[in-house]
Length: 235
Length: 109
Image 1: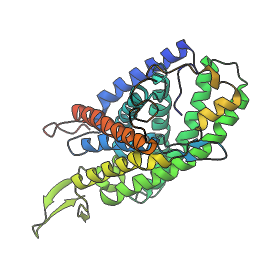
Image 2 (image 1 turned 180 degrees about the horizontal axis):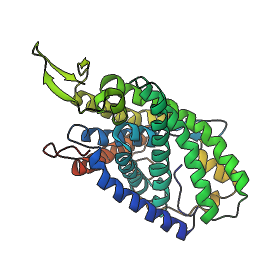
Image 3 (image 1 turned 90 degrees about the horizontal axis):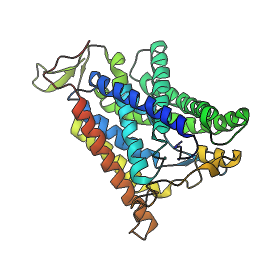
């Protein structure tokens, strides 16, 4: 859902730019709550994966395709504040290096793909994680559903932005239906990819997954030598 | 309390994710759907696609996820994908390392 230059007028682009700057600033400050020596390497890799996955458009009906947005994946794996930073880096590189997403639309794209998907995806994830059994196997399920919801949510945010500053006078009802329709389908793809990606990391290294901390128990994991002499991880 | 044995070392996991990203961007991206994405299609159908203005970086060497000096489409797209993965990795990874809590700092509670 990369918005090009020209879709939204200058005041709206500036406003979303301001929101993006504030959000990124807050995330820079708050990310240290999520990132330590152990987990920090994962953030760069998650961003790299999201970038790569966003190149893989999948068909969602005749003549249309969609691609992963990645906000929910990033939020569940490395935490929401780090996720905002990861997605912002991806969007910046996409816009400046590959001309994907307008430069004047960077604020808009950060609000849509970096903020909306992260916030909605993570909120739904946390809600589900609270009501589902507190087991590791539930983490990718909750993440996948959060991801599925996050895509049409971002589509609605776009409609809202378009209502405020869209270049063309459009009937909002039609725009909403059109955007929701295709993005519900894209959300299905996002949900499946998120479930698989989060599931694969949870399966091998749940201790590195931000969203799995509750399922593992809230204590900080320590590496201690076991009595037999081999290293293990004591939860 | 259960004793868990870490099944995959952090370095192995990191390498694995990087390889996946490189294969996705460097190889599989050539086979991605080429139809317009959801927003673009809606813009075309609803009549606001034409309000798009040219991108300032449209003449850049990697614009459009290709390498302009490479003739073969697949190779061009693949190299562009690999470049993107590495640039994002360095920038995002560097940023994460810069803002992280060092090991000598107490965990916030």
